[in-house]
Image: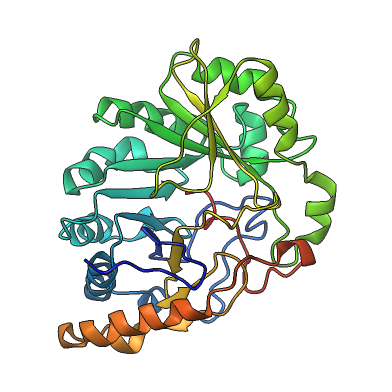
Length: 328
């Protein structure tokens, strides 16, 4: 089988596939004013057939893991059909979704039946009032019920994404640890990043994940070995805890060394870096099954343009307007 490899000998086993930009939450660090179409309508997002073709191309190029993202991917009425279409590729062993969780209690069984293997849920606070303040939605209990429903549906582990913010949740580690002590949850703290025009919020609330890492190591948590299709989290386990802790620290030196992910946007652009570049159009090659070879050639050829590292340290966030793309 072919394998996507860049000029720095990094191999790419993992595709993040956005299927919509629409989200119904208004998180303070992401979409504080709610979703704005920016010229895109629901009809402009990748169709089911286009998703089938692009996932097939990546599968043929060695992709083992696909994560469906948004926006909020479950807002797509054909979400179950999308899951099934990606799972048509036997080489894709892991099919995950990153969701805000508000529909999980109702629909998680349908998603699993369609072929979903993994689920990530965004939960930035375990306090219902603070959750409401962060997300703009009074849905904390619905999301918690959705996590319970995922375990009842047969998922052995649920990943929970928490954006780490100074004076919001950075001092709540022990509360989170109590929550995962008897639950097989991998709780992943994601460093707040400077995105779009959120510079003021970044300067006010950014805190390095190193603060939590030092605390975890002092408490006996141990770093786990990373597999080739894992996301960027440094994952820690503890013999006294059923759950795990993950740290995603994009500002840390050598963050990009182990990069194994590519992204396709909801309008069909290939992004070689998850941060701040305009992308390579693929959509003109998604109209017909006969274009598969040309599509694969364009994906492979595009990798020659991938840079060795991102430019977040220089404040270059480019088109990156939200954090939905990072927590895989």
